[in-house]
Amino acid sequence: MPSTPISATMHGRDWSIRRAQQPMTAGMEISARGLKKVFDDGLVRALDGLDLQVAPGEQTAITGPTGCGKSTLLSLLGLLERPDAGELLLDGRPASMISPAE
Image 1: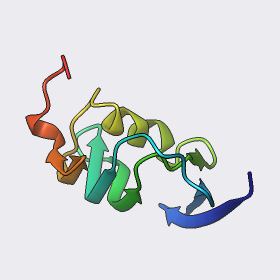
Image 2: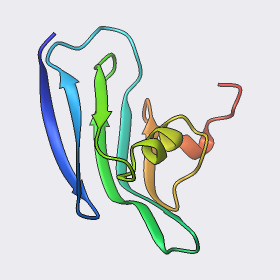
Image 3: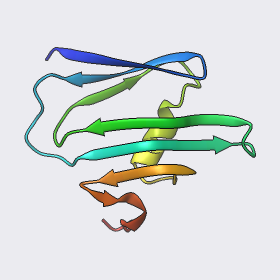
Image 4: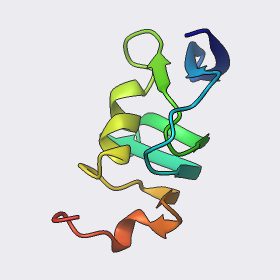
């Protein structure tokens, strides 16, 4: 299936998000606004104000070089970590209100 790249630069490193042009019909909506995540007492800014919108069932791939924040983003989306700032919504619900059982 063809995809459309969406490029971004984070801390001088280029990375991209690729989306399928025809989304599947099932899934959950993911909305991130202003996501920030820092490590090492603020010395490392893994994510610095990231905005992302993924429609239900939309196939999305995140690509980029080592150290650009891909794994950090996935850890936040998978609720393994919490952002230091910003808002993450899953199906319109704040991620902070979703229990691990869900």
